[in-house]
Structure formats: structure tokens, C-alpha cells
Image (cartoon, rainbow, N blue to C red; front, side, top):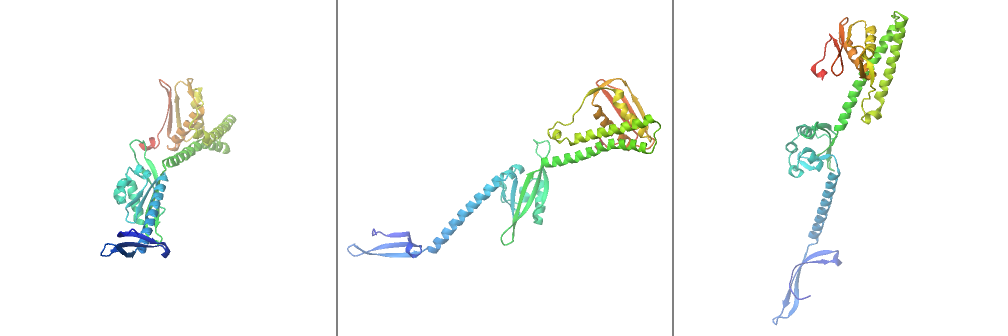
Length: 352
């Protein structure tokens, strides 16, 4: 239009289905220098333009997908990392980097076997990658110097498969299960202790009931004494069950409740010792208590539980007709009761 040369101008022909061209044009001049026409060359670039537009859209979708993936990775609180088909680290979120003390930018693209320094995790990851198994679950521990005990993590694997069914890699997701594992141990300990605590008074009840059933009671006074003992032990057993089932007390952290009162040495220890002397005739009990009238501050019921456990163990792990010695001594700041038997004893591990 302005009679000037045109070089590489892109033009669009909307009337021809939106075709695109590259236009090059030069003016034609006569001898007098007047322009009398133009020579134009049009190069159809519609196909290239379409491919360029497709590429731009693909790159935009790729950036959007990458942003979405990054958003998902950031939103996952648990440690998450992805390994590609060549066993190289492909993705890792900040939680995984902090947990494993790795910089994701430095380890992405490296082999998982060399990037993961933690042996307990690395060995299990490599084994899972080798088998290419999904839904594999395993525990591993991480020890930090600032923590008194290691952090227990539970990891789970998932296999990545493309639309054609080809193996593309694996996702590993790990979460902190330290508290869960601690609770599992507490439950096991509770069951073990509960079984022992319940078995001891039950043994006393059954032992005296057996004497009554077999009519091996020498006097009416002994009979009443045995019945009273059975009743007392059943009552103590009921209170023990109440203590164990008092979940609200346990959850609040109040722990063991003691009901302290002043009790004479003889009244504190002799009832349970007398019961064992009468019931367990297959052992020789030797009892020597200093200062039987001395008043002690104690919880009689809890002391009885302790005595039951110590005496039942002394009987259980010693031979028939062997001697069991009970010795009470006054100390500077209290009273010391010792129970000694000639049984198999305990290993140092059992003592601890």
C-alpha cells in the first residue's frame, strides 16, 4: 500500500479458512522512477503455524500439569518420592527431603540406590523396585541425635503403569507411625501385666477353694478363715479389674493411685504370708520380721499385690519341699522385705 518493499511479513487470510502466509513484495518502477506495480511472493505457512500453535498448547498443558503435580506434592504431609522405570529418582516432596535429609534438587535424576543414604530404607526400596511389586508395606527407622528414640516410619509402594500397560516406575509414600508402634507395645505390655496380676489372686482363690472342696480343713475356724480369704481375694480381684478398666484415668495420665495409711509391719505382711503357709504345704516358709509393731506408711492393697507376685514366683520356680525365706529389716528411712528361694533364678535380661 505504501509502495515500499515488504520482507517476511506474516499475513492471515481469514476468507480462506484462516490460512497463514509469509509475504515478500518489491515495487516495480519505470525509467522515470515511478512505481507502476508490485511483485509479491506468498509462502503458505498454515501447516507450520498449526504445528507451532499445537506445540504452544502442549507446552502450556505441560506447565499446568507440572504445576498441578508440584501442588499435589506440596500438599502431601507424608514423605513422598517417585522412582522412574530406570530406578532413578524422578520426584520428591519437601517432607521426604526433610525426613531423609536430602536436597530434592540435588538428588533428582540420580539412582535411588546411591541417592538414599539410609540403609534400612534403601535396601527395602531396591528390593521392591527389583520385584516391581505394588502395595508393598514395610517399616524403617530413622535415628536423629536430637531425639532419644528413633522415628518409626511405615512406607507403601504403588506401581506406575502407562495407558499401554508398560511399567513406568514406582511411588513410595511414608508416614510416621512411631506413636502407633509405641501404643502397640503398650498394649502388649498391658496384656502381659494384666494376665500376671489377675492370675495371682485367682491362684489363691482356687487353692483355698480346692482345700474346702476336698474337705482338708482341720477346724471350723480354718474353714471360716479360708472362706474369708476367698472373699477378700475376690474383692481385691474386682477392684483390680476396675483399676485396669479405668481407661479415663489411664488416658488422663494419672497413672497408679495409692491410698496411703499407717499400718503395722505385722498387719501389712503377715496376712498374705499366713495364707501361703496354709495353702502351699509343699514349701517350707521361714518368716522373720523385725519390729512387727512398727507403723509404716503404705497402701496395703498394692503391697498385697506385690507380695502375691513375689511369693507366687518363689513357689512357681522352686522345687517341692524347698525353703522360701521371708526376712523383714528396719532400715534408716523405711522397711525392707526380702523374699529368697532356691529356684532357677533370673537372667540379667529378665532382671532388667
